Amino acid sequence: MIQRVGLPAKPRKWMSVHEMGDMLGLKKTDRYWLVHKNYFRTETLLGKMRVEIASFEKWYANQDWYHKVNGEAPGKELRLRSYSPKEIQEMLGTDNATVYEILKKNNIETVTVNERMRVPTDAFWDWYYSQSRYRTQEDRKKDVAAEAASLSMPEMARLLDVPRSTVYGILSSKKYAPLLDVIVIAGRRRVTKESFERFLQAQDTYELFNFEYEELELKEKREYENYKRRCLAEADHSQEKKCLEYLTVPEAAELAGVEPATIAYWYTTGKISVRKTGKIIRIPREAFEQWLLKRKEKGVV
Image: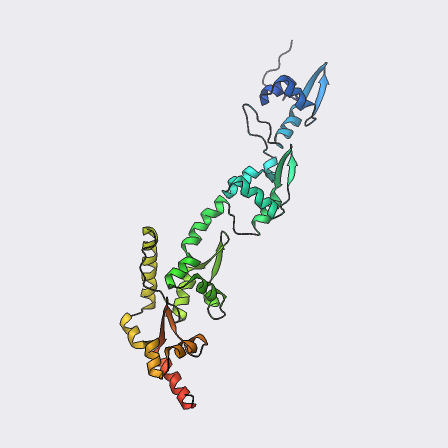
């Protein structure tokens, strides 16, 4: 017998049904049941059925039902083309019911592989990039920096001490909307802090309100106090200066010789400008006096 030394062993092309079954941890009946499903190529050699190894591995990489007792996880190629609901659940950090609701509500394409539903990767990402409510764990990490540099609608309302509806009114206003940069994170609008500071500087109707933060958590209190302090420093507002430069509604009414309700009518109809600090209305003294003077010159009582 001639023995060839140094030559690599020829790779095996076939394995027995018994070997295949042991590899997947299947008993005899289940082994032959799987063989007769024709998922991979088999042949009868020397009176015994054999499984083609390459064909078996190709099938194994494209299914996720059967698992090798020892070896790589199944579905390597399958996961490149589609995701299972469980995989989507893990990516989005949500629950199983929510995933099925998303698939149904958005009519996302699904396929069936080994009697299991899967979602083609293209269909999933087409949906994902068409919305902003649900985020992958990777994108949520990226959102942390964006959230730190922006304000939610409730946060902006607290800083100005106005109802949330007023904030939405500001964002839809032709006058103020251009001053504010709005971003969307997890399906919710937020205003960048940089543009909010620009908004404070560019108008005198709304300003930061010095209210107590008893309802906020300690961490939030510190963040708001630091942020508010910085904004106030940049705006350089002096409380003493405000008292000289601004009138209360009763003071303006007395100066104009009208009822406070008339003052309210004037500023709600845009005839005079005001500055709102929460629920407090203040009227720029100089501008109001000039307006009254022009009104008197026109003979309007």
